[in-house]
Length: 291
Image (cartoon, rainbow, N blue to C red):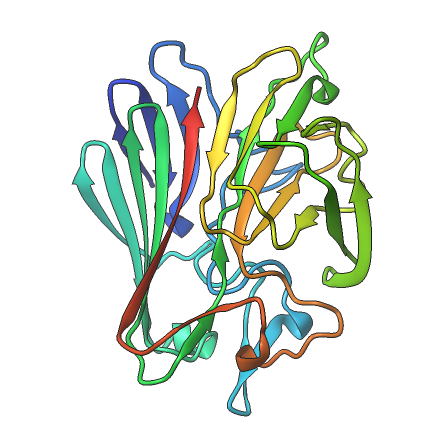
């Protein structure tokens, strides 16, 4: 089922399963900003990542000596048990509360909320995580929205760029054949803060930038000044990814990183995860601004 939020500028459709954004359109021009799924390429458009990001070593985590199976990107993606609430015409929320089912994968009492709101020409996505347990709760979370890049005989992926706020020196962590992060670092070439896209840029999987010092990037055509600006204040990491030669680019602010090949699978030893103390809440936001 698709749920709808809209304002005078934008209309957004969100799938009930996984709280996944399926469409974000300009109401006046009908321009679509979210990649429209082609299952022969990739079967998602905007997975919600919690409490893990990327592949898990051995597809599991441990905590206090017990093992818990954990799927790639965590337990929200493809989850049919989210509760939906329409908060206003332009705002809605999806909630997952811990249960016997979730505790087979993640051993804590928690509440996870993702709130979608259209404000002017922006989609504001807010994650609210509450620790309802009696112990500290480690977690990762983040976004994975695929923004469409319209391609035709006259427009190639190389006509698009990712713009950074200023000139940056980019070094990407690399993902090995295991699907886990390695200790190898890949330099990524930019020109005055501009990363040019190409059919081969993602041949080695995602670009994973750790410990970033910027709070937004812009996806736009090379010869245009405006596009889609993604704002992610307080996120320490950013991934950029696409299937090679596909007509989309995922811009993924991350709080936490995927597992390293040589990393412990114990939740309490995951150094990039955030920890919430008992009876506490944490919130963080991603904004997609249509310029």
